Each structure stands twice: as C-alpha cells, then as structure tokens.
Amino acid sequence: MAEARAAIIFLLLLLAPLAAKAGAGQTNWLQLPPEQRQILAPVASQWDRFPEAQQNKLLGVAKRYPKMTPEQQQRIRSQLEEWARLTPEQRDRARQNYQNLKQLPPEKRKEARELWKDYRQFEADEASTAAPPRSAPVQ
Amino acid sequence: MNEERVADSIRRYLDLCAQRIEPVVAERLRRARTEALAHYGEGRSVLRLAVAGHGTGSPGQGAHAWGTRRWVPLLLALAVAIGVSYWHYSEQGPEPGEIDALLLADDLPVGAYLDHRFDAWLKRAQQ
Image (cartoon, rainbow over all chains, first blue to last red; front, side, top):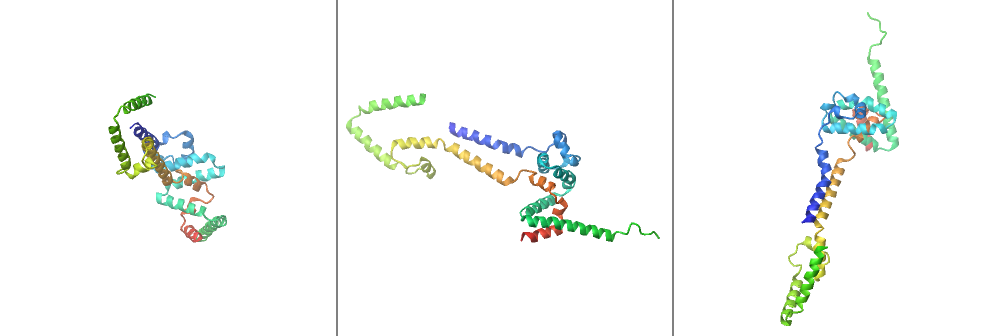
C-alpha cells in the first residue's frame, strides 16, 4: 500500500506543473515586468483584451527579443501592432506560410524575397500611374 | 530491520516444530505441498504472471514475485507520467511565440505571408 501511495504522490507531483500551466489565466498589463512592457509597448492599449493564448505568444516574442539583432528587433517593433490587429485566422495563415517558406531550399527562399520586391515595385508603379500627376494644372 | 528479525524468529520456530511432526503427517504435508505447487499459477492473471517473471515452482520465486509486484504501481505511475508529458510536449510543438518571434523578425514583412499572389506562388513552389 505504501508503494501505491508513493506512486500516486509521485504522479501528482509530475502532473502538477501541467495543471498549473493550464490554469494560469490572463495577465494584466501592469503585472508584466518593465522590460516586457517596453518591448510590447506597441500593443499596450490592447493587451488586457487579448485572450490568454495570444498573450502567451506575445510573451514568447518578448522573451526572444533580447537575443535578436538590432535589425530584427526593429522589425518586430514595427510589425507588432499590425500583427496584433490581425484575426487569429490571418495569424495562423501567416505562420503556416512562414513555415512552408522555411521548408523550401535556400534558392527558392531567395526567389521568394525577389518576388516580393517585384510585387511591391509593381504595386508602387501601378499606384503612381493611377494617381493624377501632382503638378497637373487646375482648370 | 525489525521485519527481518520477526521473519527469522518465525522461521526458526517453524523449523523447530517441523522436527516434531510425525512421519505420516509430514508425508501428507509434503504431498499437499507438491500438489499446491503444481497448481500454482493456474487462475493468475496474465499481468501478474508477466510481473512474476520466470514461471512458477520454487518458494524462492514466489517471494521474488511479491518483491517485484510491490514496484508495479510505481512503475505504472512512471509510465503514465512519461506518456502524459510526451503527449503534452508533442501536442504543444514549439514554445509559444517562437514562430511569431521569428516571423516578425524575418526580412519578409507579415503582409507578404498574407498576400494571395505570394500565397499562390508558395503553393506552386512547394509542388
């Protein structure tokens, strides 16, 4: 019987962290450490409304942020607000496409970056032709 | 250990009494023991047999089986815990936010990963 009791206690101890993690709940903005608040500042006003899963992912981003290069940190800061505004489905699609791209060989990934530049250039050209010339005389 | 001392005194007491048993009674006991040992194992569950290990027959093995059985709950608990942990971490995949951090830090903007033309190109490239 003593062995059975020991086994149950052992099992509970092993599973306790999982249960604690599952019931952690949302985190209030003011409960975050100052350094995390600084990194996540672009989403400060929406933070308390984010569901727990989204908060955890953003906290994961903040955790990795200090280990990144200044360029990567700048990209994160500039995209964080837009990222938080996306719907969960859009974020899932972006994650899926990101992972799909990562699985391609390096030359294909390079091609993808070139392609994106071309798209942007094409859009810029289209916008400039569609818009009326700035110096058009007013009649 | 107190448990061992008690067992030892019981054994000595039984040995002493066994010497005083009449030969006829001793023979009947011997036959009963042989018969009991021959049937040892019948009706035991597959799990218990598996735990007991090396078959049946000698009294020493019975004690060994009992010693092994005492660890069964602990071993089962350990197996369950390992299984649950493995399931939990395999379900979870990468740590939360890991992909998001890499995606946001990538030199391709988030907009690229949501662009339908880019999406179509990616699907073609994967084929």
